[in-house]
Each structure stands twice: as C-alpha cells, then as structure tokens.
Image (cartoon, rainbow, N blue to C red; front, side, top):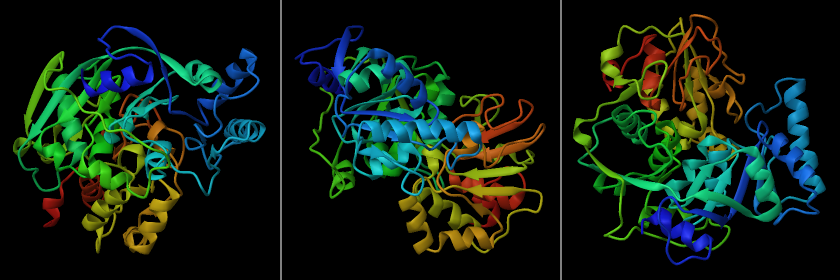
Amino acid sequence: MTITEKILAAHCGRKKLVPGELINAKADLVLANDITAPIAISEFKKLGAKDVFDRSRIALIPDHFAPQKDIKAAEQCRMLRDFSREYNLDLYFEVGRMGIEHALLPEQGLVGPGDVVIGADSHTCTYGALGAFSTGVGSTDVAAAMATGECWFKVPDSMKFIYYGKLNKWVGGKDLILHTIGDIGVDGALYMAMEFEGETIRNLPMHGRLTMCNMAIEAGGKSGIIVPDKITRRYMKNRAKRPYTFYKSDQKARYASVHEYDCAKILPTVACPHLPSNTRPAEELFEVAIDQVVVGSCTNGRLEDLIEAAMVIKGRKVNSNVRMIVIPATQEIYRQAMKKGLLEIFVAAEAVVSTPTCGPCLGGYMGILAEGERAIATTNRNFVGRMGHPGSEVYLSNPAVAAASAVLGRIGTPEELGL
C-alpha cells in the first residue's frame, strides 16, 4: 500500500485498502474557520447532537476576515466564539492568539505524522508535509465530524512525483510546486493523493514541504503527502501535543502515474493570470508592471519566507509605484520576525506589516485590488477576481521574487538587484 492507503486503513480498522473503496475513517482533528464554521455550526445544531465528539480535537480559527473587517465578519467570528464557549472547546484561537490556520496548527504541534485531518478549507492538504492524510471537506462534513469524529472518503489513487538534482539559487518549494502544476495542469491530479519524494525532497526543509503540500489542491489533488523522515522528526520534537506514527509507502505500492523532475532545470517560477498552471520563469516577465506585492498567506507566510523576502529588500526601497504588504502567518512568527529585525527591514523599505490574517489572498481585505491593477503575491491562487476586482490580475511567486519585484516596480528576480 501507499502511505495514504496505510493511514486511511489504520483509521477505519482495516488491514488493506484499495483505491476507489468508500470508507468511514476516524478523524484526529477537525478544522474550520470564520467563513466555513458558521455553516458547520448551523448544520451541527440541526443534527440534534448533544455534544461534540471530543472538545480537544476541534479547532475553530477566525483568520479569513479577522481581525473583523465589517459587521458581517464580526457576526461570523462571534458564532465561532459562542460555539466554542458553549461546548468548552480547547482549540479556539481568538485574535491575538490566532494565526492563519494552516500555519498555526503545525506550529502548535496539533497535527502530526499518521494523522487524518479534515478541514472546511481547501488548503487543509498542507499537513501532508508532516506525513499526515489531510484534506479539505465541505462544512456539512465538518458538522457531522464534530458530532461523530468520523468522515467518509473514497480512497484516492496516488500519483508519485520524484524530484532530483540540486536546487538553483532562489528556488524553493514554491517553485517546485508551481513547476509541477504547470506541467500537469490544474486538474492533472484530480482526486489523487500527490506523493512527493526524491533526493531533493529529502533535503527540503519543512517550510518548503508545507508550501508544496499546501498547493496540491491547485492541481486538483485530494491531498499532498511526503513520507516523514528525520526532518519531520526534528520538526515535531518538543512540539507534538500527542503521539504520532510514521508511515511509509511499500516499494511495490501501485501508483496511477509517476512524474520525475530535474530540479537543476527549474528556475524561479511565476504563475500568470488566471490559473496556477499558467507558469513561466520569472526572468521572462520583466515587462509586467505591478501595483501591489503581498508576502504572506498559508503558502508562504512562515518565518523562513519572511527572512527570504527581507534578504532581498534589506537596504532598498519599495518602488514608488508599488505598495508592499507583509503578513506574518502567526503571532509566533510575528514575534520571531520582530526579534530578528525583519519588521524593521520591511518598514524601513516602506512596506507595511499586518497582523496575522488571510487578508488579501481571498480578496478579504488588507490589500484589495482595483480594476486594472496587478499584484505579485506569495499566495496560492490567481483566479479571476481572487484578490479583488474581476478586472485585476494576480501573479504567484516565491518570496524572493515578490520582494525583488517590489523594488523594481515590475516582475523581476533577485539577480537583477545583484543578489
């Protein structure tokens, strides 16, 4: 069996599973945010359940429109707070303690290898970087899971992606996954478990792995996953809140397809409007002027991402025709960035730094685009109207390319700045 099949088998009491089977599996963690939880809460009330299945395994995180941007957002966030109080939930994270959900839960050690995690948010696939099966589901599925602790699945087929060779300078997990999506398309892994492996992945730090698994959904994937190893163990040490299990794929496991990539040939990559699969090397886009730069999100708002952006922009200024918005993904990342002087670097460069929030990634707030405006962002989607007006455009990149573009006033690379 593959690692995905083994994890699901363990969570439904079976010794063997094959793709296509319908199962009910126990969930180790159930997640929802301020957009999706209100629907789940309403449906939970309709079920007539007297209590939640486990108050320590339901995480409610207001992060999309929080700090509350308007009255409607305030009402939605209040539903999370009231429900959490009513059922005495352990994992409610108020503003000041919260972060972007898919950065916060791994940071807090609330998800781990071998887990089954479901969330009413499509980027729940992020936690596959730890060797977990994690996937986004609908709010009604979350409602049922809050009551029963279980969710139904069709066991997905697996695709294997093998990466080898040394990474070029300024190339990381974001470039690998954008290159992959550009290769197979936004539906190239439809309802598949995307298993990332190879020597390059074995040497890829955890923040790069989290970025790759985060964007599995942009290829249509049911999940992304990386077999846990010493890097995983080091990340979980002194962090895990409960025991975890390492699984790995059998050598004779069956895959729907296998794709191999020579990373020495992968350059800093940008996804052009209006699909994550519309990729080109950043160096080919030097004629694209921009109005806004966003460094943050559940994809690239971790400390290492901020360090990368700060390395590029230190001692420089944001172009006078551009606004740059930096959003640390969690309070802890914010504190560490402050201690390391990163926030001073960004402010000195005339960027702005926000409290943790999903903000502009989904067109929420804190950087909405007007008609005709262009942004380059370290976020995960660039669909029509994703960050604001339907007549705006979003380009996706890694933090170094985003920071270089902020200085140049157009899409560019750190090499153009002599880095």
